[in-house]
Image (cartoon, rainbow, N blue to C red; front, side):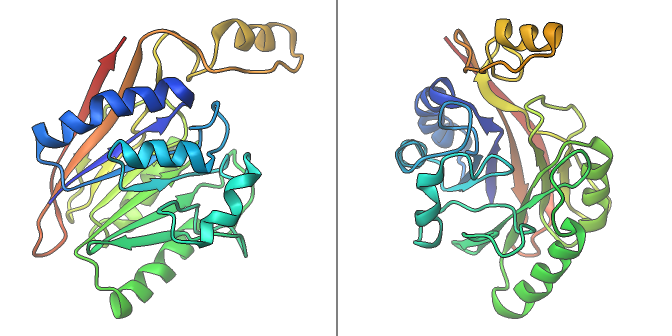
Length: 256
């Protein structure tokens, strides 16, 4: 089984890049499932039903999210109605679902707490959901999108879930890391997948506004940058029999 995880998709440039790259990439790499983090798909902040539809039509199977999932209020009523969009499972009593099982694959979304909003413990939440999954779902593979700021917390989650899930893949920082590996007990790990957004930017946003914010300390309205777009993603190959990762590799593609 070959599963592609796409890093945070930023606004219209990110959506267009997915539409241009993903259909051919699915065929080229014989990809069985595509997971994409869509929490920045609508103008860089949140996701709408329309922008979710664009990504699903382009070949994304399941959309994950993070702290920006609530930025576009219009999406909230659809999060309990079958849309393949999940939010971090450790949000307490929030709308929507924290995981989704599709074609025998479980995708679980969690959010870190270091330098992030205070939520329920992502480690204990993961354990509780996995225990339930073993008895009720028996998924062939389990992919975890861990949306977190601190590299230490992400690495900690990788080791905590090693051997219990197929992959722990970090999102949120929009800066891809180079530490893709399969951990000793068979879990693929990467600290951060990166983003699908403009290269000439500060994590996807227009550089002038970001620099003004840094230089003055004053609030600035941020907009998605323009220009060439990179799609950061990672391909995980999984043993169908035991759900262990066989390999993990970065897949980075650029479009004008």
